[in-house]
Length: 189
Image: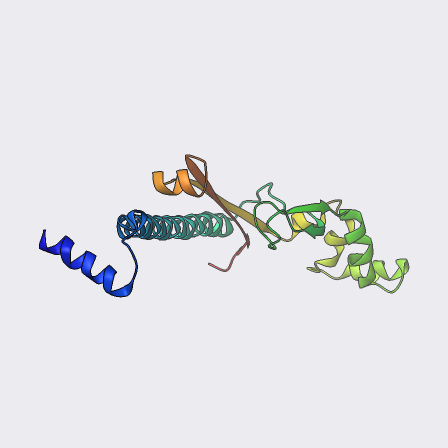
């Protein structure tokens, strides 16, 4: 009772009456602040989980590519010929939603490999050199298959925290995929 009387006296001294709407303002501000802190904490935990999964996926993809690179067998993997790379909806380069247009492997052969000789008669000289890499490159229909590239890939799924799922990203999980290309190391090991 004394507390309420002191409160009323303070309001009379200032010249204002206590407002019934301000009575619960502190608790509302506390709850809003607590929810904001929980959302930030959930976001931080989710980003940490996604980052760790991305690192693990990249390590596994690199390991698979390195194993294939050391095998002395030719694999049928060949990367795409990329002519043009367009950013996706997130406006960030080299992300999952980006798209590329394919290039022509024949144009690569004609514009790069064919220019190793000044003219078509000079190819006889180049072809007579043992161990040169230009002859197979010049005659290949798919020159990238001669570069000795091998692919390693890994995909993992990350379950989203309920707070993150309901407030930020409405999906049960996010797939993390990493793809790595390495050069074959024939005879180096």
